[in-house]
Image (cartoon, rainbow, N blue to C red; front, top):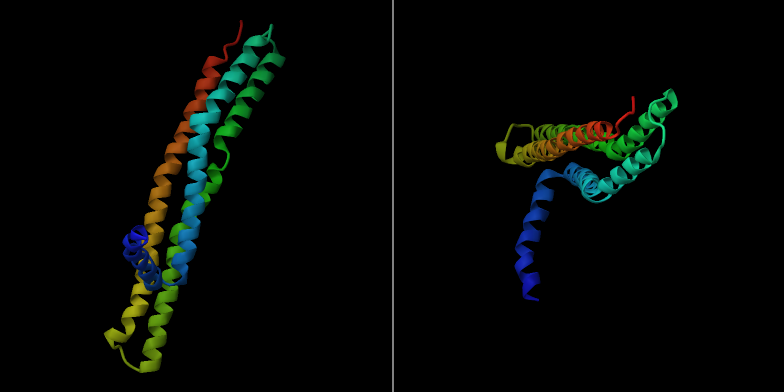
Length: 178
């Protein structure tokens, strides 16, 4: 029970933040969760499954008796390509999520500004107090979208670089007989 009492102020803060930013903030949060789930899936793949894939691929290549013909070159390329496909899975989806985050933030800006203009039209003046809610709905989603995009961009770049490096390494380890 004490844990619940300790968590309540944090939950109230999160709820207030979502109310301040409007409905678009919920979309940004869901997109961010999807993006980070994909990022964690890729990290787990790199740490757990990828070493096994590399080991099995190198074992299959070394088991070949002949490694210098045209056919051997094509088989080597296919094996490298299969490893690369595993490495690059979901990277384009992560990049798409990164690109969508600021766009959703911009959508929040537009909807917040529409709210400001509605208040101005109804009240007939530029009363700052009446416009404050719309201005916060215009700025909070923009900030949230940018923060989500920046965090995802850093991880996306890391994963892309790691995939390229691993693809190059597997190619270097699969030696050709001359």
